[in-house]
Length: 212
Image 1 (cartoon, rainbow, N blue to C red):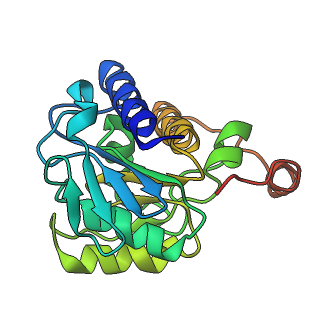
Image 2 (cartoon, rainbow, N blue to C red; image 1 turned 30 degrees about the vertical axis):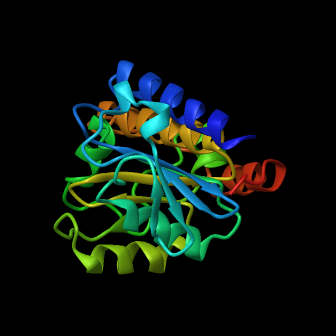
């Protein structure tokens, strides 16, 4: 796919996520890996009104090539690309239900959400919690990078999810599934639930290996 078409795809997915309330204001960011670097959404931009021609283009060393200045959270994306060479795109949102779960006490920090549905297992699998760091803190990048070698999706405490995929479509579909599962988790929190068993989860992972 050409850079021009990738820019258009980023804008289209951004608008879709925004229009459905999965991001708001200037929150959230998207990136796509290129042969010579990355495309990233610009700083202060709304995913609902991205101008494809202004999407940031960075080289492999993070130098700004063209477009507007990149998101200030670009380091979160670059550290994932460094650890996961097969990653084609990264999506980070402040989606309401996922953020709500990230604020809960006494959640399993090694795997935040239970395997409530087959599609969650297929698209996310395991979701660790990254400890809280202030926005822009270099230690946040270090924490994400450490987990990225083993996980394509992580949840930032009191912040939101980051998901990597082989393509932008894969990453978007996965983060949407994460948000829906977070919503289900909160809806069912006061009820006895019946998550998938370890055997069912293992069977799904064998039959449907992730695209990550």
